[in-house]
Amino acid sequence: MPNSSQKMSARQVVILVFDGMQPIDFSGPAQALITANEEGASPRYGVSVRAFKGEKIQTASGFSICAEAIDPALDIDTLIIPGGAGVHDAVQKDPQFRSALRQLCERSRRICSICTGAFLLAQTGVLTNRRAVTHWRSCERLSREFPQIQVESNLLFLKDGKVWTSAGVTAGIDLTLALIQEDHDTRLAAKVARRLVVYLRRPGGQNQYSEPLSLREASGMLIFLQN
Image (cartoon, rainbow, N blue to C red; front, top):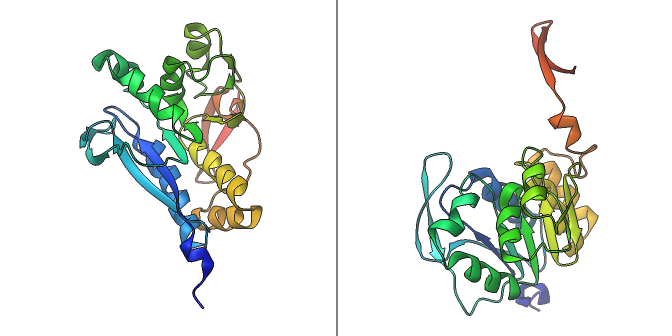
C-alpha cells in the first residue's frame, strides 16, 4: 500500500531575492528547511529561490546566483524576505517593487523577514501596527523611519499574526527552526538543529551580541569578554 504521506502537497516556500541581499539570509533558512525534508518532514517543504524577474542576482558578497521568476499560479505557503544592503535600494531602483511585494505578501499564508528584510516589509505596510525586530544595528533606524511599527530590539525573532521577523544573520536559522516546530513538532525541529549544530532555542537576545565586546587572548584561545 502506498504511503499516504507521499501524496501530501509540499508546503511551497518562496525565498525572494534581489540585488544586494545577504547570502546567509537565504541559504540559512533554505538549508534548515531542506534538512527538515531529509529528516522526514511531512508534508515536505518545496523551497525555491525566486525574483520578480528570472535573472541573475548580485549578492552583497559579490557573487551572483540564478533565480527563477515568480510563478503567478504558485500557491505560496511561506514567503521569506532576506536582508542586506540592497533593501534600501530595491524600492528606489524599481518603482514596481513595492506593489509587487505587497501583492506577493497578500497571497502568502505566512510572511517572514530575515535581518534587514524587515525594511522591505515595512515599505509595503505589512508591519504597520505590528511588533517587529531586525538586526540590532538597524533597530533604531527602523523605529525612526517607520514609527507605526513597535520595534523589539532585544529579540532574536518574533511572530505577530501571520508575520515573522528576525534579527541579523544566523537568527534566520532560529526563526526557521521555530517554523518547523510550528508546522510539525519539537522532535523534528530538534533533529534539524542537531544536524546544523545549532541551538534549538538559543538563550538570550540580541543585547548579548550588541553590547561592546573586547577580544582577549588567554591560553592560546580567543575569548569574548564584556566591557
